[in-house]
Length: 262
Length: 263
Image (cartoon, rainbow over all chains, first blue to last red):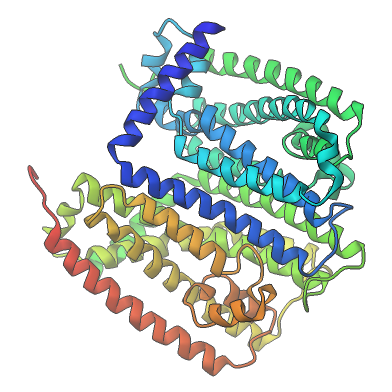
């Protein structure tokens, strides 16, 4: 496990060095990411200038949810989204063969191959929005729930990673796998809304089949005092199950892989 | 003209070949739409309302956002292709031939849009019929306005993203300019939220910008909310002329700046 942490640090360093080759571009990218996050904040503010609440979520609660979703997007790009987004290109160009012969886990290598460090700037806006959403309320009184929020947030990330990985295994079957990036992106976009808005079969799907609820809603519920222990336990179970399922599908897909080059 | 019609036909063939992609893009748009529909259902079921939009109008609005974004969305892909062509020097192949690269890119985009329309037409007809109670459909004149404004949308999508992609003549990573354009366009074209829900001063400013013509204006035509078509079409025509002249000027300057060593 320690070996993989060290490897991640090395990959991070390499990606940072690559980014620093075009510093202007890197800082422009950071600015764009911040701008994108500010747009999300503005849109929520505009929506709430017309309404009072969304399924029981006030403006402040929704800001906390949005902030957590931004942290989630940022975390994704820092750990797994870049590598997974590139997987179709890696497979189509035959570079996946190169990954298979390395003495480390191929799934790990495919995941951290590309790290988008500039997206870390989204976290700054995310944190600011969470603090702004919590200021002026009694929410800071629940400081002892912060560790629980972090644990459920990490569980949500495992769930999201698993969903992305499952989507990307299409790449091993079709050369047009890049379009799955769009589905993954849209799926994460859904996490910006409280899952309480969903009703009927869609609610069942986003709770049990594609457990979107655990990505941002559960950590936000913890910080806004809406949490239940069942949700926390569910978060942990969802993370474990998602990881096992995605790992199994990945292994199956790699077994069926036939080289594109060599 | 024959060479350009071949470009158009080739474009159709390429997009038919990659039809799985189109299917997956459609699925991703539907995933996004499902969230928005539930969001608005939740808001309206609690007795709240967004501006002058009733539930039927707001759902129609976002369904149309999804449809238009799917139909004309290839403009963004085109911009990234142009960046690649410039960065890799592939553009020189086109410059050396009796062929307009700008026209070629426009016709390729029109080809992609035609395929998108053909692919989506059965879904639109069946979906529209099944959900006719939940949508607000326009009158005959509304349909005419919608078709005209939709052709404007294609033109603006092309002009704006082509201009952004030509930044590659001067910067190494022109893709950053495309991302910036996506963000600015997304904010001001009405795809995130109807522009008339912005504070009045902001809405007033957006009504003089070109971005509204990509999403917001065609939808307003569909919802029959265009009250001064003369003013709207005047603004559109002025912007088309400005952007076209700017595109040709930037293109000429860019080609002069281009260095194709080793090609």
